[in-house]
Amino acid sequence: MYTSIIATSESLRELLRASFRADVGPSGLASLFSGGVMDVSLATPREMQGQQQGLSMWLYRVVRDDTRLNDPPVQRPLPGGGVELLPPPLPLRLHYLMTPLVNGGPDTEQRILGRVLQLFHMQPELSGADLRGDLTGSHARIHARLEALSLDETSRVWEALDGTFQLSVSYEVTLANIDNLLQPVRAPLVESVQTGHAVIVGEPA
Image (cartoon, rainbow, N blue to C red; front, top):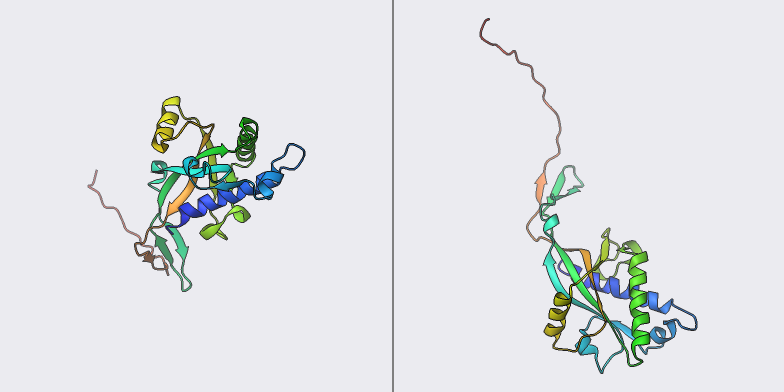
């Protein structure tokens, strides 16, 4: 399915929302994210500034996952016997820039960012009930990994945004697959195996 990218984003966003709302206590973030003051948005940091507060979870880069390009076809059993070989999907790596944006100053921004880091450190994999969108009910597994961007790489991202640098971190996320629409190949069921015998004749010694 071609909707795996947005389904991955929705899964990550809902997990972050739930984590913020569960952060109760005197210095917790629950009151801010539960009362509608802040939210987790897929908009860019520039789009959020002056309009929304909370966390910008911006998908800024999509690349092919070369390590999984040679994955074998997926085998799916057929009701009448035999198997169907599904062409492997296009494997992708998604890169998200997590940027807290609030009017309350750096204290709240750093608390939001700390909560993001804590969440994906404790739960780097999403599956089962954590999946949203078209991934709901599937066997997909989403992995989030904190990636270290150099100062030059970070500067290029913010230059592309044409905005002022903000405190942020980047996460590389897999697995996002775009399905192949080629027709599957059907392999018939093996009904019997024929064995044979032969005598090897060589030159006399």
